[in-house]
Structures are given as structure tokens and as C-alpha cells.
Image (tube, rainbow, N blue to C red; front, top):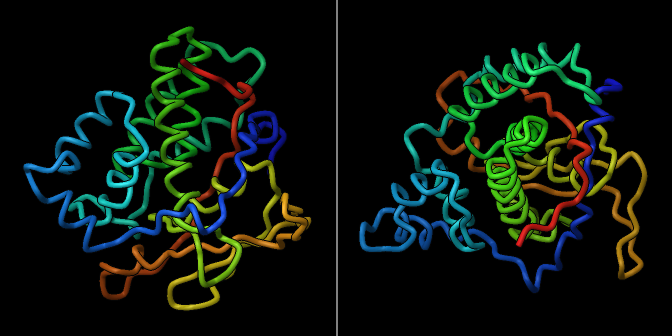
Amino acid sequence: MTTIMKRLLIAFMLIVPFIASAKIPDEEDIKRKIFDPESKYYYTNLMMRYNNLERLNDEEYHYLYYGYAYHELYKPTASNPSADELYASLAGLNTENPDQQQVEEILTYCNRALEHDPFNPTMLNLLVFAYGTLGDKAKEQAYFYHLQGIMETIKTSGDGRSEKYPMHILMFSHAIDVVTSMGLETRRPRIISRTVEIVPLAVPHEVPDGKKIRGYYFDYSRIYRNRPDGATFKRERTWQFNNLGVKEYK
């Protein structure tokens, strides 16, 4: 990890909830609601509101995120060249005093990358950073809410402490971003079954009940669901969270 990446670290320090409060995605429920034009979770409307930077509630983010698995544009095995261009452009970024051209490049690459992965926490986080740097408080706040909504959706989909109750993701990179957002250093993820991977921690993490967590488990089964014949997976690089600090918007 580069020095620049570490400078952009932000830890929301959100504790992964216990399974009692988890909202495990119910595929039949999700399909029924997102495809029903009369439903308040009708997918076309949810995505339109998301793209218009409206703040959604917890339920809406839940159906938006997991409903994307049924969207024709959901192609988790496809490459995301704009993300690669973004990482390359960040190599010379001065995080303390970025110039306007650098920030505008971030905006361009992030928006293009989101066309392939609209809920990518790394990209949403960098948009918070970029708009905050430019002084656009409205968009900084809007993307912060989107980032927080997506992260909480994943974190509340399971406690992540065991293979039995994993958190559910749409992209491999989302798992790394979730663990990173808790201020934890990760090791190389390992696939342990046809549906679950573990993201090991560099140092065991002690949670409030006194237990030590050595890694978090994620259900990646949606990634394989529509896998084309012969497709192989390449893990996306992830960008750690920026140093804007924890914000509280009213």
C-alpha cells in the first residue's frame, strides 16, 4: 500500500452488528419488489433517485444494492478500465494540497468507473474527497450519504464473523472496502467455499463482547450467478478511505 493510500484513510469505526439485527438478503422478496412498478422499491425509480443524489433510507439502499444483481448492467467479471486509469492518476496526487486538474481527473475517472460498478465504496469515497476539496458541500454530503448507505447495507447483511453468517457483496473489492472502513488492516482474501470467502486481518480485532476476530466472511455467490463460460476473475485494487474525518450531517 502506498503512502498516498494511507493518507486517504478514514475509519468510520462502524461496528459490524450481531446477526440478531442483520438483514440477510431474501432473493425472492428482492425480485418481487424491484420488478413491481407499484412497489416503492421499483428498481428503475430507486436507481433514478440514487443517480440524482437523493438520500435514501436503509430499506431503499438495501433493495438498490442487492437488486442490482438482477440488472442487465451487472457484470462483475468485466474489467473496469476507468478504475485502472484512476489508480494510475493517483500516483502523483498531493493529498494535502491537490490542484484542480488532479481533482477534476478524479471526478472524471470515478464517474466513468461507477458506470461499471455504481456502488463501489472506493469511488464513492473519492468523490466525497474530490467534491470536498472543490468546496461543493452539497455533492460532498450527497456522496457521503451514498457511501454510508452502501456500507451499512453490506454490514447489516450478516455479522461476518463466521461462514454461516457472512456479509453479502456484489463485487470482491467491496469486501476489502468494508473491512478497511473499520480501520482494520487486511491480508490477502481466501475463497473457502463455492459461496464464501474470508478477508483475514493482519492483527486480530477484539470486539465489544470480548471475542477476537481474525477475519471477516463474505458471501460472493452473486458474482458467480451469471458467470459467462470461460470467465476468470481478477480482483480489483482497492483504495483506502480518505482523511476527511467522520462527518455528521443533519
